[in-house]
Image (cartoon, rainbow, N blue to C red; front, side):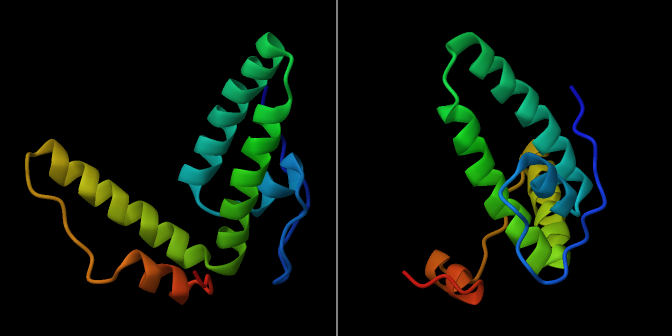
Length: 114
């Protein structure tokens, strides 16, 4: 199954909490690929288990990612670039880079208060 995009263009508002709107709001190719492959897995699980709770969890998770994509598309691209560099460094046996901020600082910069 392949989710088809439709004419959704974020205007600063958060996407609807639907599969179509969430997918349309994703701006980074890596997110689109992960969404599509994850959706295939989740739909297969739902068919076998006859329990839609896993699909609801998938939608909740990806809605948060889509909101982040709408709010900060450049930040999403940079996050994937950093992850690719860290993966390559790990494959070469190099130590992983450490950030200079705590989780609390990172979340606070995103507007999340703990």
